Length: 301
Ligand SMILES: [Zn+2]
Image 1 (cartoon, helix red, strand yellow):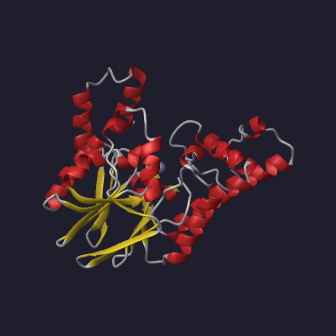
Image 2 (cartoon, helix red, strand yellow):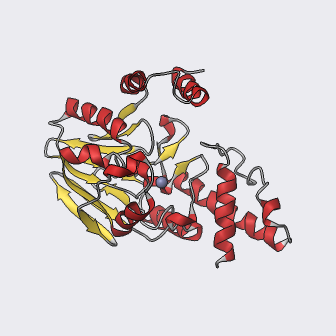
Image 3 (cartoon, protein in one colour):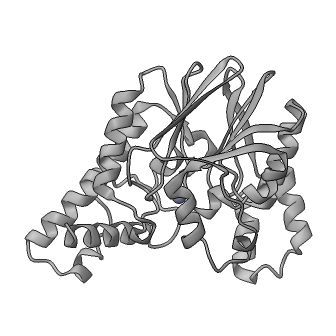
């Protein structure tokens, strides 16, 4: 077992008593992250929660998503090795706390925080109840459909194509370098998080990915919100197609089983989706939650 997995298991078993909090933080700071450049000063950072995208150029620094306050601190310290540490634009792809809770840490260094209006609305109404939610920091530069700006030699563009993983997802394009942060529109080769209370739409998700597949080209590098390993948090259009086809297969399976007269409880016992047996689960009951969302969506359509 890798050290990281061992510590995670020990924490689960002991409820955290096995390791003191500061020991755990020291561990996180040392060796559990990946900070990697993809091309032309743009890269990604994984630690805990959604993948952070970053751009460090002489004439501008951009950060996409913020994870949690403690992992955002580790990230900021890495950023300071490459730059002054100041962030010109911090962007939130959607409201989930593993993408926005770190705003509270990074806002000190950020000139502007940008997000879709539905992202901010859902961040205010949905992320409630945990300790992390007490110091929520929201975007101060809000858009509805598209947002764009030039920063030094790079052109930046963000799109909101409608409801998908949540009601307020954006994808972010470094246009000149042709790198796209997909937020949680792609859980690469793992079952996605789908919760209808976040205004998720599976049919919207398919359309959103179709739009992205049509919009970007074969040279585009994509950064994904989640995967099983850091190596798989970036990829190409084939990964977008795989995700799109999984959601379509999920909806078709549930539709077919309903048509065959199966009860919801029986459908929820499904162990895998045909053609997608290779999908991994990042948490227990991941497929069942996907099926549940599909059942709710089909009942309301
Ligand atoms: Zn998410």
